[in-house]
Amino acid sequence: MDNPFERRATEQVRNEEAFLSLVSPEPITTYLRKFGSTGQLYDRLVVVLGTPGSGKTTMAKLFEFPMVSILLRNSSSQAHRALLTALTECGSIANGSPTVLACRLPLESDYREIWELPYSEDFKDALLKAFVQARAILGWFRHLARTGVRPERVKVLTTGGSHAASEAIGGLSGDAVLQKAQEVERAIYRVVGALLPPGQNDLGEDVTQAYRPFDVIDSFSVPFGENSTSLEIRPLAVLDDAHTLHPTQFQNLTRWLIKRELRVSRWVLTRFDVLTPDEAIGALIAGNGEEAELPGVTTAREITRITLQSVGDRREQRSQFRKMAKDMSARYLSQMPEFASRKLVSLETLLVSETEHLTSPKTNELRKQIDASQKRLTVSEERRKKLMGDINKYRPSSRILQEDEKLAMLDIAMHRYAKRIPQGGLFEQGGDPDPKRPLSIDSSVYEAARLRLLHSYGRPYFFGIDDLCDASSENAEQFLRLAAILVESSAVRLIRGKPPALRASEQSALLRERAGDFLRDWNFPHFNHVRALVDFIGKRCLTVSLEPNAWIGAGANAYGLLQEEFDSISNTAPDLLRTLKYAVAYSAIILVPRYECKNRLWCLFELGGIPILHYGLSLKRGGFIEGSLEELLPNARSNS
Image 1: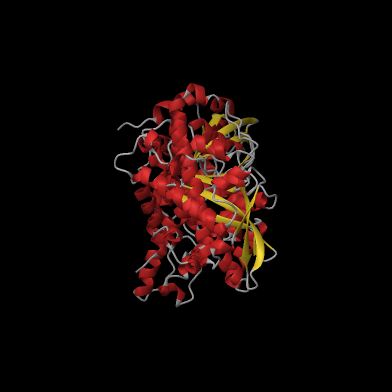
Image 2 (image 1 turned 60 degrees about the vertical axis):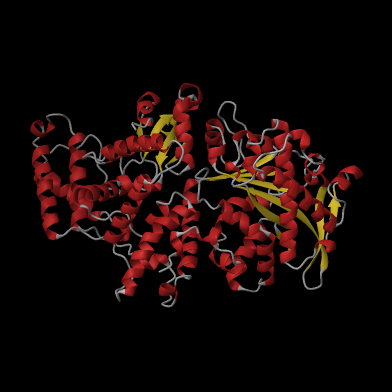
């Protein structure tokens, strides 16, 4: 059985129509629309930062010219309407015609090898720039050819620079510019791919001569549509996987691409890995389009920085991701005959959202535990009845509480009551004094009770589509990989003639099992240090979350440092900063800067969805344990 959830489907799909059937427009709308509407996506360098699987490549492929052409040809199709709207809002389509000629250049091979050549750094940078520009030209003309536009029908419109610069790129006719790019690309590839690179002085003219098409080209004039109307279109070069370059290469490339004189639109897509720890953390703290506040970290005015990460309005981001994930899962389910033939294309309907309650023997065991707590805390029977009466009035999501939930909430309420009465008050005031502060039965007590039932009795805790989405840390690939095991189990049920919906206990067990596998399979730079840091935070959060009186409410899933202490981390704890960079880069930890609590500002190290599932913590945000840098440092190092 082919399960598209198990693979990075959009990167493996070669057919454009199949690709478009899988892609959701939500990431485009969420991350790019506000920059596209102001033109910031095309008039300066755009740097898109994201964790692996956050959707950088998928978004870039959607902007490529063949994809846009297919969408425009099928503009009447209901299936493509949302994608068309998203691209129009981003400014890549206007009045039913493309405005941007985009091509994506994966930097996974060849480009890094230039750095290993035995030449001076300046010369290697010049080779890289020429290689990128030549392959961008080839990419643009290749995309035009796929839509039926021959090179000789393309005219190059220049920035009005020197005649010599135009001659250096082959002239102003499309076929001549293409031919020159082919010559340059071929010459540089021979150098890069040679077993024994020639000496710098022995290189041919095609390698050493001036070649700067990005300085010359302003736009292309191409025939488009049924009437072959001449269309002026702006070229866009998307440099994907830039983190594979050497760090110095990346910095030099960025310094070149930032030049205001360049008229060619350019995007750089990269992971956080390629940035220095200061830059990576600074990018997250600053958010999209703002300047970083860490010392020495600034976002230049010439750069539009887009971070595919939890920054800004996190509640809105979580809501947007849920919407995107549900749309994406429906598209993927429609590719699976087992579900499509039965019109089961909503993952939400396959995941039962009603919990399963404890069996009678376990409920009786829980009741005995509550009786023991009442006796140990010397809570009167009258007080117990009063607390239970308050619990009976509480309605989570407008439904009636079940017995196991009431008992677990009662245990928490009695422990809170015992904490709020004067010492010795039970004997001095007739055995049933009122608490110093009123006790309220609210969602925090209910959520704490649910968490306790998970760890004490194995009652399912993670289930339903919203929990699946929230455990994905706003990462598309992580969502697909978590959903894959649920979809697989549901498909097996279908094959065996059983109802496809998964019970809450099945979902919770499968998700925690898969999270444990993912965590054990971590294999990225400094992953042992990241694992040690995550383990320390996860175990501390669990211990505090299971305190008898649940003083932290729904539960903790984050470690909090005072913001001023975190701001000094670059100087006081550079090793921790490096570990934190990779933890954030691979969704193990999410940074939440400037979080207001107790009239102070904190920086939270919030665990990602995978550790939360593994340790069995709350998915609700905001609960954190207070700590210090001194306490954190010894636990941020691997013992292996």
